[in-house]
Length: 197
Image (cartoon, rainbow, N blue to C red; front, side):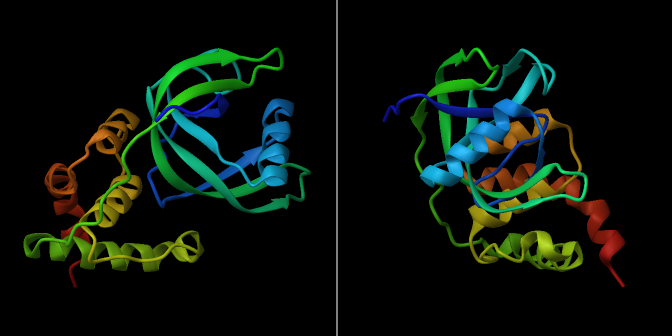
């Protein structure tokens, strides 16, 4: 399914469905975008930067995630802070750039991640995830916890684990939750030892 052009926010991070995103917004193009999203209750697309920087021309991944703003505040330094949550994934079909530098993307919606019961062999990963999320404090307070859902557990582990952005993008593009958990499990061994009493 193709949609009309919508705003894109290229970042050096990967946003997963249902995941939290906190941003400090100061560039006029993104302040305007945030204002429009709040006014129209609309989303913006987050895509990983592959080349270039966050303030100039960029090359991005073609698979991204829509973000919906759930909170905002003005910082003591005058910079706007927003909290958003990942929604549905999309594929970029085309990109244009406005005069103010804001990117617009023509996108195709990808199928929603289907809920899938967490296989028994991965239950220790869900237990570890619950412990880590508790340690992280407020970032996950507003997010529904689904520790019995393989896709949800995989996405949360992928966004939390320290790994290169290219690996996170690979995780985002995996459509099978079990394959995602299999990819992540070896990276969790050191963390599981660290969390053991």
